[in-house]
Length: 599
Image 1: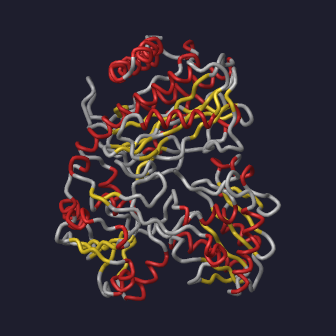
Image 2: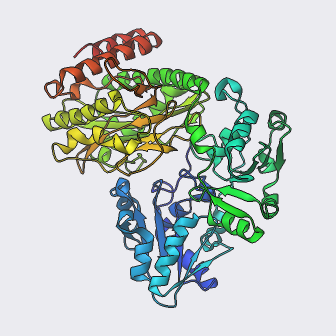
Image 3: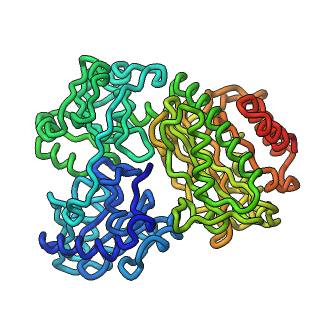
């Protein structure tokens, strides 16, 4: 289970920890210190030992940063956490700021004083983000100083959890579909470099066909690798993680090395062309390579795009994982309708996990389950605690966003259900979200299209009514890897990788009314091969929906749907019934027949 710093475990983290950090800053002559959310591996979800931002502030979201000065401090979050951050953070200690308003650089430029020294840990910042911070400090007349000893770590001291050392195990061809040697060979041939330095745990797990357990809710090992253009590689892993099976699994062209050898191995890349991703690797690696005299090519991680394009075995595994996961979720939705009285959020979380556990093959959840009743559903990344858990009452909406990790696939699905009788406003806005969801599911598009060009399809029905939501519409998903995976995505943000056959993305428009309720409908879908359209001139890509679970028809205002949309939803529900029905008990199957009947 996730180890986190929230109000149920340590209600005094902010007031108690901030003075300790400032004392450690003073010992190093620092007037300020920057605390990013990211760790040494630029992870989104963190081991407890690396959850520095949470320890310093109490904020447990998956993105953000803090700036700690001797006399003031600020926490920076984006719109997803506009409600969560004030609920978790002592605002007498931290000013809460919007990342979209310039973030930490803008704050430094406006707040830092001439002559002040602002510290940073080079292992935790990408070179591009560090450049923006340094430019802001120069404008303010302050200076940036890299620290070798992180003052926050010094303040944390012996109370800091141990670094994870979960066993690293093979991920066999039954699930990966391609041998590591073949992956390394084809990626090495495609590199315009002598070597590539890899630091992203997902890249290492995918490239070497291994999995671990160092990162929360993701089967990832923490480590590093150097891949050479001939396909040979050095893999740096803590010896405590290496199992006998792993040593036999890796082929002769992979040298297992201790992480203490990494700095020396980087030094030996002198005069070589070395590819490294500035979005994935911290400034420390660039500094080491510059010192070594390597010729640095700032390039995207060479494994990112191949990893995102799932092969036939991975796609078949995704279908199988979503089928069993859909049955677990459908059992849960049936459980909800059979409850008499209010439904506690934490009880719902436990029950859904129990249904997934009952599959017998669940390895972990893919993230902490979001179960928001009533106003809690309006907090986009809310997860219930003992203190915040609320009972869903008659007339409430219950938003449940959850997923599972299975050897053959990773799932992520959101369903919003009505407890009792929904209001007409709830039905109208749910149906607007549904219309956008259906539009994104049925779209056909030519090769070369990025997700940013499809985003408006999901938002269009909401925009027409003056409504919107402050999160992306879709993210990539790994194959028994991270639930958030690039380089593809669907959002307002321009750019990103063009969608290609085999990529898995989420389709999750929503609507959130602060203080009242939240709505989100999420399915995962895989990009299909281009096919001809009758009467057309170009073959078009599309999406195959992977997620299989009913959508609450009590929340659908059928009069707002077009004939095409009704037929599309009926076809989806017919597929849910055909594929999920046989996996259910008699009572749940009879219920599913009712809720999947044509509109």
